[in-house]
Length: 234
Ligand code: NDP
Image (tube, rainbow, N blue to C red; front, side):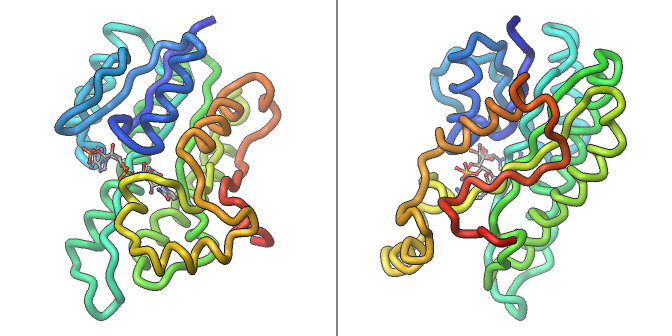
């Protein structure tokens, strides 16, 4: 049966790979973008994930045209890196807004529909840096660590209604976000990854497919690494 799947930040990178993977299974994919989107045949809707009005407009439209969201992938996220003494308040607030508050806002609306349906799967996209830490990313790592606490709290709140909440913790994935790393830094990072390479976005998408599906029906509150072994032991 085709599910109603919402992927935030789906116009590029990991979000686009996730949207494509669900679409290829025959699901109805609602994909969000901000300024422009590729030609993929999803239902494209605009979203500023950190703005409540925008989130409300998105869900009003989805619920009117399609019905309640059964699978939510809260993927939209940003980095605004800087060492602590140089990090501006707005760099801190923007990252909290997009990565943490944004996930809260979309989850709150999605959970409402899932509670009525008495089923659902919520997947947060976290990061290996939540556990490892990362110099220059105190804002970003804090949001990704915050998502783990949020996912586990919601797993407890919503589990009795057959709504599962899990988090994927990617390592380094080949997207625009990592394209800014210079080649020396990339070499250094790769040397620390047991599998010896960065990942393709689809390698994250395949785990999202698993977490949304029946094969993972007894898994909730889990943090699933997709990091080539970089974060193992955490
Ligand atoms: P990209 O920078 O390639 O894409 C980010 C996506 O999020 C874009 O679609 C972007 O939209 C959207 N987005 C950002 N801010 C907002 C906002 N305020 N409202 C709505 N949409 C927004 O990133 P990745 O694909 O690499 O990352 C996706 C997720 O995976 C993020 O949460 C990231 O933290 C996480 N991650 C990525 C890793 C990596 O190595 N790439 C590693 C670990 C985690 P627009 O195009 O309009 O800017």
